Image 1 (cartoon, one colour):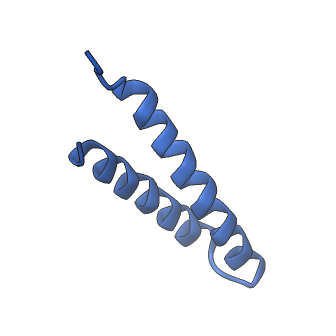
Image 2 (cartoon, rainbow, N blue to C red):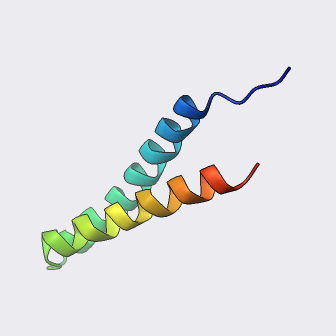
Length: 57
Protein backbone atom coordinates (compact mmCIF):
# COMPACT_ATOMS: atom_id res chain seq x y z
CA UNK A 1 0.00 0.00 0.00
CA UNK A 2 2.76 2.46 0.88
CA UNK A 3 5.41 1.45 -1.61
CA UNK A 4 8.50 3.62 -1.40
CA UNK A 5 9.58 5.19 -4.72
CA UNK A 6 13.22 4.19 -4.61
CA UNK A 7 14.36 6.19 -7.67
CA UNK A 8 13.16 9.50 -6.27
CA UNK A 9 14.57 8.72 -2.84
CA UNK A 10 18.00 7.83 -4.26
CA UNK A 11 18.12 10.99 -6.35
CA UNK A 12 17.04 13.10 -3.41
CA UNK A 13 19.65 11.52 -1.15
CA UNK A 14 22.39 12.00 -3.75
CA UNK A 15 21.49 15.64 -4.38
CA UNK A 16 21.26 16.45 -0.69
CA UNK A 17 24.61 14.83 0.08
CA UNK A 18 26.31 16.45 -2.91
CA UNK A 19 25.05 19.91 -1.99
CA UNK A 20 26.01 19.58 1.65
CA UNK A 21 29.46 18.20 0.97
CA UNK A 22 29.96 20.59 -1.94
CA UNK A 23 29.44 23.63 0.27
CA UNK A 24 31.94 22.42 2.84
CA UNK A 25 34.55 21.32 0.31
CA UNK A 26 34.23 24.52 -1.73
CA UNK A 27 35.20 26.42 1.41
CA UNK A 28 38.13 24.04 1.90
CA UNK A 29 39.26 24.61 -1.70
CA UNK A 30 39.13 28.36 -1.14
CA UNK A 31 41.47 27.83 1.82
CA UNK A 32 43.98 25.93 -0.34
CA UNK A 33 42.87 22.29 -0.42
CA UNK A 34 43.44 20.31 -3.61
CA UNK A 35 40.23 20.31 -5.73
CA UNK A 36 40.62 16.61 -6.56
CA UNK A 37 40.60 15.73 -2.87
CA UNK A 38 37.49 17.88 -2.46
CA UNK A 39 35.77 15.99 -5.28
CA UNK A 40 36.75 12.71 -3.63
CA UNK A 41 35.25 13.84 -0.34
CA UNK A 42 32.05 14.88 -2.09
CA UNK A 43 31.87 11.54 -3.91
CA UNK A 44 32.39 9.66 -0.66
CA UNK A 45 29.59 11.65 0.97
CA UNK A 46 27.24 10.83 -1.91
CA UNK A 47 28.14 7.13 -1.83
CA UNK A 48 27.65 7.02 1.94
CA UNK A 49 24.27 8.72 1.69
CA UNK A 50 23.11 6.31 -1.01
CA UNK A 51 24.18 3.27 1.02
CA UNK A 52 22.57 4.68 4.14
CA UNK A 53 19.32 5.42 2.27
CA UNK A 54 19.14 2.01 0.62
CA UNK A 55 19.95 -0.03 3.73
CA UNK A 56 17.48 1.56 6.14
CA UNK A 57 13.76 0.81 5.75
